[in-house]
Image (cartoon, rainbow, N blue to C red; front, side, top):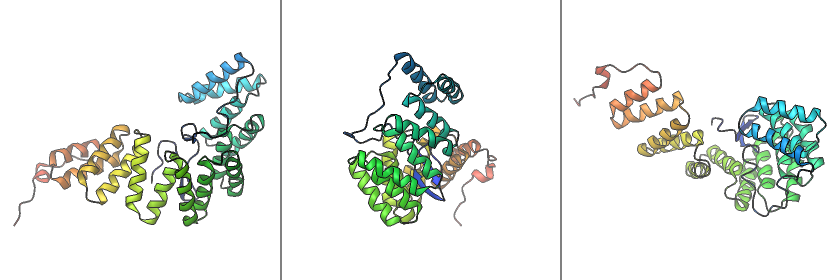
Length: 289
């Protein structure tokens, strides 16, 4: 399985769903955690919001400069501390994210996102006991939310306890059927157990919630192709390619067109994949003897 859209995470050879990209849209309703701490000083709050906007726009270098300037000027706003943690994880510095998360939690103990990001950082660092402790805290604070059982499932999967992982991820999905990290983990566990129907169900749920997840569309194409549903496979791969023009997906579309006998389309996708265009002889279907 490929890394998709920022919300897949590979640790120790096992695939789990990340906690970062889905945190703001995956929280269950009625979770007793503050969305964000209120700004004490409006000017400071506006400056922090501007830095967050840079981050959300993908302007990470500019966001780092803005955040560093605010920190140098003595700002200890929880939003800024969390932004520094996000910037560290975006750069792959998960160890560096930990102290920023801990400071944000200390400044705003009921705020969900820093705890979630802290747990994700510990997972990346393969500090499973530390991650488990954070997930336990989240479960105590939000017993009706999906993050607690999701965390248990993610850690169990990393430790090879797939039965416990499957049980706990179902608990998470019962609490929030649209929780993307849990859906992603459920899909991975289904793939591990060879349950193609379940995996396809989870992948379909992913693209319903995030239609631009190219990798999920490609996996749907693979599953449809394996089931010999060639038209479904073609549509899924075309959606994937429309979002991300990967050579491997163009090759898959060429192969599908070849299987359907559409040799002109096969040639078009081969060109898109950078392959040599077949000769006229290659494009001539074989006649039965």
